[in-house]
Length: 157
Figure 1: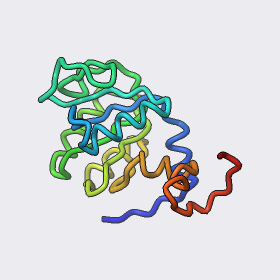
Figure 2: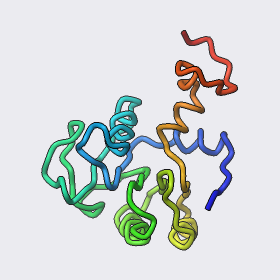
Figure 3: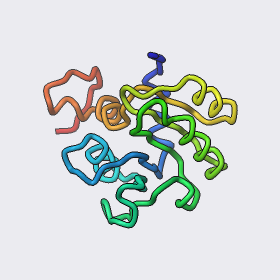
Figure 4: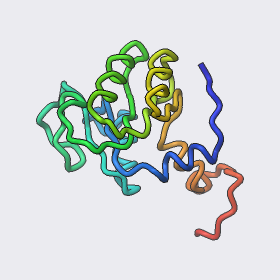
């Protein structure tokens, strides 16, 4: 499923987010979930690692928790690094745990139309099959350093 999101919509989501729970994060620094969580932390987001396999370990300066219910609100965004069939349970837990949740973000290759509709019915923004790290780099001019033309004019060196 490929939904279309305007650049302005994605920019607004990324600018309006301060805290991110990364569900399915890995402690392995070569895994995409680790790399994305680390990058978001470097960009000023407060990142909360969620993965029952690593519960109790420290990752990126935070204690890894088993589930979203182990976190204390507020969490602005839940970033899902799990298979699509795991999404409904994660969305249910997120909606039950974080009454002011702004965004559910499903990583590249992850989507679940029914869970997305449920979250949207509660007023939560849902982004599917995208990566916040890639979108951040694309929208805020960072990919240009890798030779990509983002279409954004910047005076940054």
